[in-house]
Amino acid sequence: MSSNSPLARDPSTLFFQADYVRRSIISAYWLIIILALPLWWHTTSIERLSLPSSQVNEQIGHDLRIPIRIGLDVGSDSSSLALRLQQAIDALIRNSPKRWEGLDIHISNTAAKGLNNVDKLYTVVNSDRIAVRGRQLAFPMRETASVPELAETLSDLISPLASTSEQDHRVAQYSPRYRLSFTLLNEDAAAGNFFTEWDVSDAIAHHISPILSQLEVLHNFTIESQVQFHAPLAFSPRIVNDGFGIIPEDLTVFVNSAEWTLSSSASNDPVLHFVIFVPSAERRPLHILDSNGEVSSSTSFLLPQWGSILILNPQDSFPLSKLSSPSLRPVFSAFSIHLLSLLGVPSLPPGIKEISDDHHVLTDWQLDSLLRYRALSNARGSKDTLRSIVNLVDQIENMPVGQDVRGDIQGALVALEEMFELSKASLTETFRRSARALTLSSRAFFNPGMLALLYFPAEHKYAVYTPMFASAVIPLFVAALRELASWRRQRNERATGEAT
Image 1 (cartoon, rainbow, N blue to C red):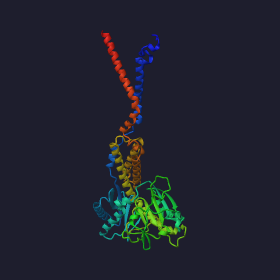
Image 2: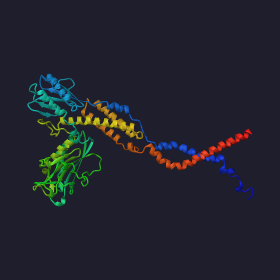
Image 3: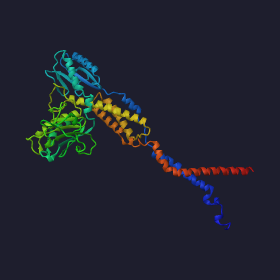
Image 4: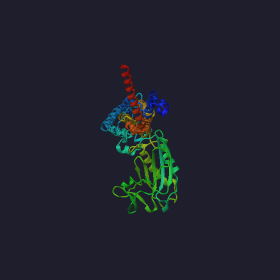
């Protein structure tokens, strides 16, 4: 082989084997990796904006106080009666403070300065009977002995027992929008004597719409209705002397969610169901039994926070295929009562008559009581939700906090601040701000972006990326070490040669 042949040349003299070329190539790889690290870090990191924790803690420390002004107009002795009535109500507040939580009661005569605004003032007038008209209470003021009775009546009107655990369990959670679903269920149309149509529109117009029109300040309602011809029970009723019976334990599982399609809308609004259940011809009459196994006089029952169910056993006088408006009158009368109960509307105390010129279903006392109940519960719920968000973000380091979450929290704080400012001026505006605070805080708490990487911590990220890049980085790392060692060896050799 000739000494001039390319194969006989020293490999180190080849262009691509030159030290500076080889080291430049390795350096270029590492330069690309180093420059790409910030981009990788940015694309794999989570957005975690700071929350206004100090403002949240400040708002949590504030308690909503709703003032209630009551003026007495019972003659020349109004001032002294107002003082005694204030003392009687203060005694009631001390005996049951939870019932009066968030309420400030002030009694005076109607001539007191600043109490002439009828929108903010409840008045008590002397009368021969107990009745309410608007925000006025007519009460027979006989002697001093009537003051405790008046205090009890006012407490039942202003602060009904709507904050008990039983009431809170039954009342649907607040939502600015509700869907009311009215359903006619035939257990088995194949058995005959079933209903194919009903005058539901007329029944809703007479019994439900007047209630909804008065509650529009609290909620927006949408209504839907349907008829089903096959709605079997998930259990078998008991056989009793005159038919079939359902025990109280069966009422809790009466709804057959697996086979009943009760909601026909795709909306996310909470639904309150009102169901007429028509038993099969083979299971009539179907009764509700009490705890003693006796047939109850009631044919309807309420499922807390869900809706109402009425069992309708057709009589021979019923048309074979249609439920007319007269037949639906007692049914929707029961539904209207259950609707008020589900929405938290308090009933008037026993013995109090309503004097109304506009045929409203609800009195101003009931509506104001409901507004106060919802405003106080919304304020508590929004503050609890904000506290939970701050605690979760502090405890979970990798929980994302985006601009939309922080914006909702700041919006909820603004709504709470406005609520406190307006609490002395307008009950309706106080409620509206509390509802907005609850909506925004709940939306922030359930924001899907906060849960996107909650179960994917940094350790998991490293475990995913290490197998992908280790096969490429390790050879580059070894090559860099080899070139560093070669460079140091060459430098030492040059230093030794120069010394000799």
